[in-house]
Length: 167
Image (cartoon, rainbow, N blue to C red; front, side, top):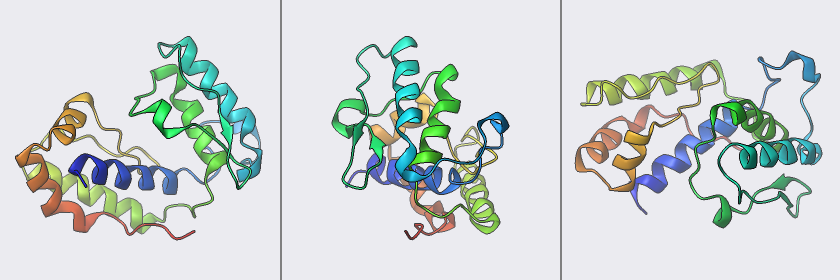
């Protein structure tokens, strides 16, 4: 398994774990949707992605648990454009059945970022208020190419990452 896969999986888990509460930035939306009611959020996200530089972004499909998602082979590693980022969060909130991240897990994520900076990556991105780490293009390239310094930093720091959330 490549470092890129490990980092992506870890950050995805952090994202999903941190995105299960009521959206703080979208108070007009009302209560958080249930995992089975995320079709509308998925459709809004697909429409936004298509309108903002991803014309072939797929339609959502229903999984065996009744949740609407996107085929992984058709989305690849996409970084959503700025106008779509709130919709990604809304979709993840509606999709996820992972418990919300605790204050302790958010602190661990910040410790991981601090460690990465101390290990030679002073521009490693801060986590957002939900504990999500959005990798910049530079760090995606380092992970994609299995950069030795990046691998060493991640290996030295990964003990700070919170454990994988239980469903």
